[in-house]
Image 1 (cartoon, rainbow, N blue to C red):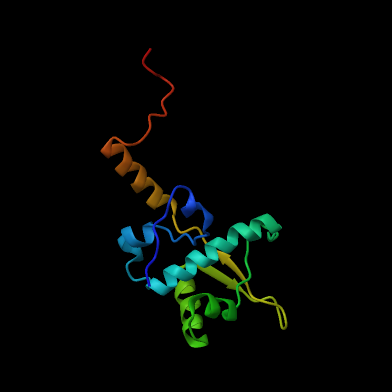
Image 2: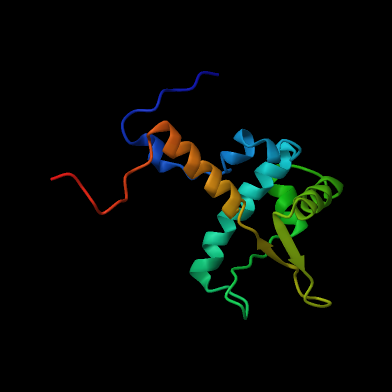
Length: 141
């Protein structure tokens, strides 16, 4: 079975899940399994859909609904594995699950994977490498 090449704008016709690059480059995420990283990317994709749908709690936080079955289907995994991945993401602090009561789905808060400390380190790296844009208003005339 041979696959063809991409031509021109063809690659733009596909939808992709985005998995944060920092999951592979920052040692803090080294213990996070590949499947958990992938599931986080799927959950992150749903955050943008929830935002568009107006799914915000009383504090203004976006939440999603992702059942075990939808995670199982998306990743081709068993119920046990899906449960393990949700627990892994929760223990890592990347998601928070909140039960709503019997018969109602669990809501999930997908947490921001990059905290202010990581941002500070990234800005420091950019500054040291000379790639950071100069935001100083004093420009040379």
